[in-house]
Length: 113
Image 1 (cartoon, rainbow, N blue to C red):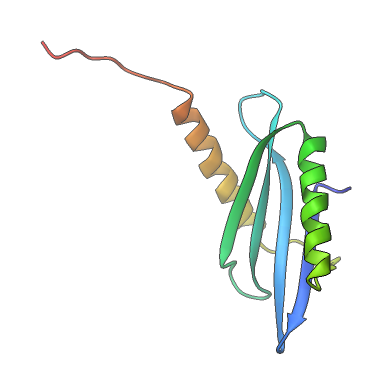
Image 2: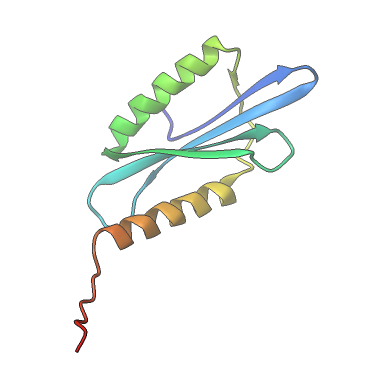
C-alpha cells in the first residue's frame, strides 16, 4: 500500500475529501505517524487527526489500510487527484514533533536561593 491516500465521497452535491499520509517522526527512533486531513474538497480541511506513533512504516500502512476499508464501506472511493492539503499535514507533523521534543525532557533545574 502507498504511504499517501486520497479518498472522496459525493453527497448532496458536495465532495467530501480525506487525505491520509504516513510520515516519519523526528528523532531517528524508527517511529512513524499517520496524519489525516478531512473536509470539503476545494476548501480548507475542517479536521486534522494523527494516529501513532507506530514502530515502522509497515505498521502505519496496515492501520491506513484498515481505515481505507472502513471508509470504503461508507461510500468513499480512492481518488487519483494530487494532495491539496499537504501544507496542513506538514504543520501537524511539526506540531507533533515539537510536542515529542518537549515531552522527551529538556529540563532545566534552577533551585531558588
